[in-house]
Amino acid sequence: MKLREQHKTFGGYTEFWSHDSEVCQAPMNFAVYRPPQAEKGPVPILYYLSGLTCSEENFILKAGAQRIAAELGLFLVVNDTSPRGVIKGENDSDYLGAGAGYYVDATEQPWAKHYQMYSYVTQELPALIQQHFPVDASRESIMGHSMGGHGALTVYLKNQQRYRSVSAMAPISAPTLRYDDGGGFPAYLGADKTAWEDYDAHLLVEKLGSEKPILFCQGADDELIEFLMPNQFLAAAERASATVDYRLRPGYGHNYFYVQSFIEEHLRWHAAALLA
Amino acid sequence: MKLREQHKTFGGYTEFWSHDSEVCQAPMNFAVYRPPQAEKGPVPILYYLSGLTCSEENFILKAGAQRIAAELGLFLVVNDTSPRGVIKGENDSDYLGAGAGYYVDATEQPWAKHYQMYSYVTQELPALIQQHFPVDASRESIMGHSMGGHGALTVYLKNQQRYRSVSAMAPISAPTLRYDDGGGFPAYLGADKTAWEDYDAHLLVEKLGSEKPILFCQGADDELIEFLMPNQFLAAAERASATVDYRLRPGYGHNYFYVQSFIEEHLRWHAAALLA
Image (tube, rainbow over all chains, first blue to last red; front, side):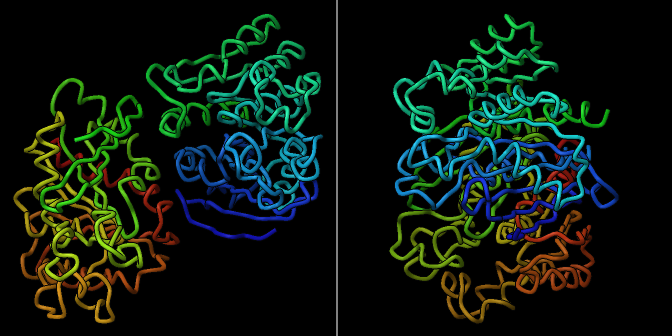
């Protein structure tokens, strides 16, 4: 564990860390925001999973989340979206390799050894956070944006006892319907689509249902909306009688101007569950 | 005038524009935030001058200012800090050339033809903003960070009737005391320091005084504080009986984590004057 940078922010600290990941067999980076309340005792944890091409920096620099986390006393954890510097050609595509881990455990070559992002965000990273920071391990929630929204939904749906709340901003909702033409899913999981089903949000919500309401936020002018397929998720959730609080935002796109506009609603959604 | 990008943000629009500058004889970029109130009629203008190495993007992406501007109804204007792509070697230094215009009108070669940033931010850009956007030209204020804090102070001090309020975050305060070893001032203005005095905030406040109180904010752990020399400005202001509301922030550095932590105070300071 190496602290690379620490910057006072809204009375707390934004920190950039690196460590050697066992499950990814590679160095990994993450960022945290340590709210002022953490000086006095353990605070709840909100995991934020970022989207394609992002590192641990995008959200922590652009979303304006620290202001609200400082008010609410939430410890933010923002992982990088893949290992980096370990596989030849990893930077050749925005949709595969570095910056595009999709929060799956890869089974195919050359990715399988290092791209174990599902295990990383559900096991290794939380263990590290609990060990090294003043957090209350019994209070965890998860959210994400775009590919990270897919991650947050799938991680939550498969671990519903663990997370107190979940939310997604403009998530990829139905990857089994979208990756026939290549991209991360066939590359990481192989051509057999049955292996993809374990990471498809719309299939998982239909199969597993949802104990808790899901906050699902989407810009109506999102330029990627045909790729994201929110309606597939909403229909599947309805078939499973899962409660989705769907908030469509007229005029908003897919970028961090959209994220910063609505991040406060998401943090307050999670705080209501985490601080209950 | 070319609109490069428009992104809905907090109910208004973040926009990136380009135009051919007459005073700089070069293409120039700027960003604006058009608050929701601008749909209904002219709104007051707050100019933000960025620091060394910044473009028009840094503040608009990282400061979290749109949220507050949307609440208060302020039209934000963020210029680029220099022309770009016009002078050979302009990217060789962080302290000179592209990203480092210092808000002075250069008199020395090879800069004089294009680096007319004082005239650009005091004349050409405001005229353009007034012509093309729904703003109230009688209500203008100015602020800046670092090199842009130097810009905001010097521009205000020489045009006190024009700006309703001024504030600076971690500004360069006394460039005549700091540039003997090179950098922008000798390169743009020549070796004769008398030419520098017209752009030195601590000399200008002593010479001209200040009609209005100056909000001056500084991180106490700013890694550049010996270069910035805030105490020189404070002492000069005191000799001139100028009122400075000096806010020293324990633990904060020079970066946008500091800026985002205090931007709300600055926008409210300006709104109090602009909306009076």
